[in-house]
Image 1: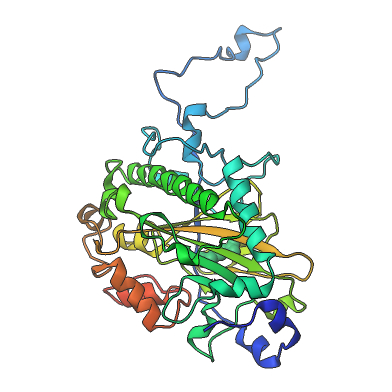
Image 2 (image 1 turned 30 degrees about the vertical axis):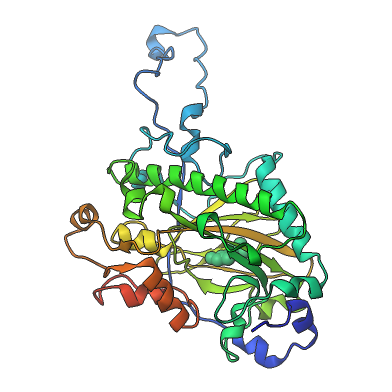
Length: 394
Ligand SMILES: O=C(O)CCC(=O)C(=O)O
Ligand SMILES: [Fe+2]
């Protein structure tokens, strides 16, 4: 069932709607993968060292040079380093090092100079924006329904009492299982641009999975194989459009949730709103800076399951504002539908011998979500946790 666009809801906003958005979520911590600084022994050259002071009484000290990462290592910085479209997957990461050294608490995100985004990022943003600027009557041609979740609309259609998020969206599959009837025919180049964008992002995730496997001390292809192999990986595309909201403090763009798949790659339109919850006692929410040419990579539930909890899925939500419209594009990379996903043997061993999750195909995992009428925090993952002591479900 199609639900009214947030613009329309804006005018008929009731206190009830406001009440729906008061949420109390337990704590969680979010980790971010930062780059490795290790230098390959073969390429390391010795810089002249400062001799001890008694050997250079009249010489000024040799200035210390700031360490710069070697260009070959830059691809292991998915959050803030340059993305090279077209680079084949798995081109990397002998130098990745164990991830635990490269994980930093969120809240110290590096800022860098704005730069022109690669063309594939900019054009995907532009065709998506074009779609949301079309008249409501045109957008409704692609309306989704409770059975067919693909298309334009809102998951509010599933349950009249469900929380209303201040968000319109377009959602469809990518890659081989794409149903093009729900892909906008306007603008004309939507299909080509989004197909290419999806391919690039899936290839990027292939590289990230290799890095994340190496980081665990496992062969590079471990995670990608655990999810069914790269050609079989699934991918869906969601464009979130958050109109200006007159009472932003009373609403949310998207309620707290973790993404059910492997990795979600988010591109923001330069307007802030994405917030990630830190795992731990304080459960503080952190705003992710909307750096325009940066992709934010969010770890999903299947990753937490396969690694038996070594990598945690991140609870996140979006805030809205009254000044500027916000848009985000998300590619969700998912396992092959029939592939049964459970904790990898190596990971069970590495994490203390207990299996923290049951096994299930991703198609069945999706059915859990539909049955539960959506995701709240880590509620779906909690139903898969095989022991009650496993860290909380928030
Ligand atoms: O809008 C955003 O920045 C994130 C959207 C998101 O989390 C989602 O679509 O699952
Ligand atoms: Fe999400």
